[in-house]
Length: 89
Image (cartoon, rainbow, N blue to C red; front, top):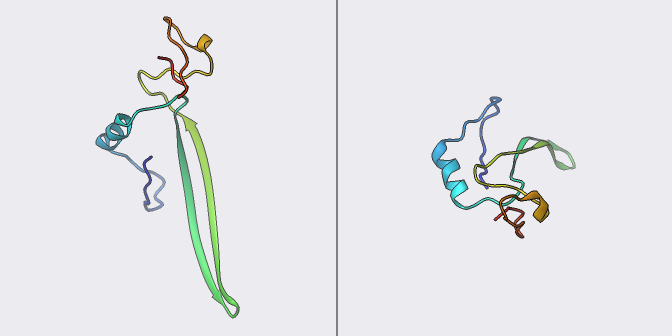
């Protein structure tokens, strides 16, 4: 997992070395990326402090070269079988 806190400029670029390190850890079937945008605000009132957290998340499927996702052996080709990590081996 890569987690980062960045200014809200509308874009973020992750360097290739960071992605390479992440992929070096391995990939399971049906890999995704989850992007979350969050804003936090607070106010102090007579009764104490009020915090407001607004968040929105989107999840996208990603293609990882060499990873074929599966839920059953029929999803695999070339005599491969579906493994417990949902990849064809």
